[in-house]
Amino acid sequence: MENNFGQPQSVIVLGGSSDIARALTKRLCAARAHTVVLCGRNQQLLDESAEEAKDYGASRTDTVFFDAEDVTNAAHVVSDAFEKAGGDVDLVVVAVGLLGDQLAQENDATAAGTVAVVNFAWPVAALAEVRRRLVAQEYGRILVMSSVAAIRIRRNAYLYGGAKAGLDRLCEGMADSLDGTGVTLQLLRPGVVRTRMTKGQAPLPFTTGPDEVAGYVMRGLETNDRVIWSPPILRYAFAMLRHLPKPIWRKVAER
Image 1: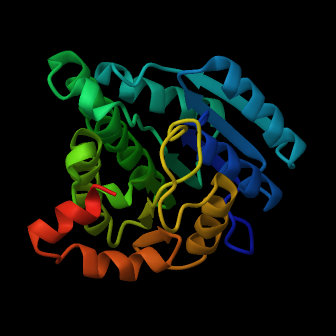
Image 2: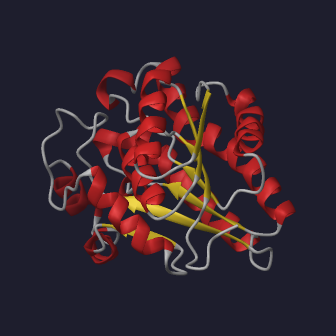
Image 3: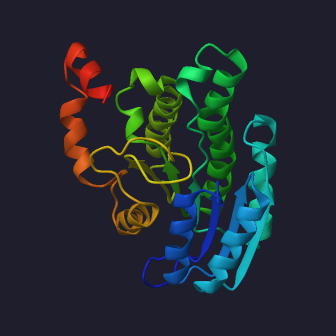
């Protein structure tokens, strides 16, 4: 149960080895989260993140290893995470994602399908089980990591952006479906973030780091906003960019 300040005390992070998830986990633990279950595909990084969580105040940590390319394991992973949390869960973070290499993968059926599964199909399957469990306990929060890439798709990232767009729209509907249940869902839409996943990419306007994103998330969790933008100025930037005529958008998106 959240503490008297509305801060989550029991947290599950799906995709817990990512740079943004690790930064957020440290912030949550510093804000009195005492139980953290980290789930992901890199056991070494999960273990490191679990140790960081303890350093920042967690008293109980555990990990769950899974492969996000296998949709059939999603419900089991979520069930395992809830069991290891040892009771009701205040916050579930869904930070699973794969950027991929658009030009190398767009003509490769297997690779293109993998990007779609990791960014859309696996999170959707996991969210179905998360939703069921949180609704049953009659309270809790879900934070899903989307991307500004979902708002308007770029030619040089349409596999990633298209999959994130599907997840983004689905979560908008899921948030509506949770009205009156005691459970809420918020979307995180970050811009470009300096992480392992984006290493080597040219910097773009409003690029941030993982800790900056985590700071925006912590502030967003204190609100009832359905969407958390990182940085907040992107809300206004994309209000304009999403309506640009296609020829102009293509030139802007190529930069």
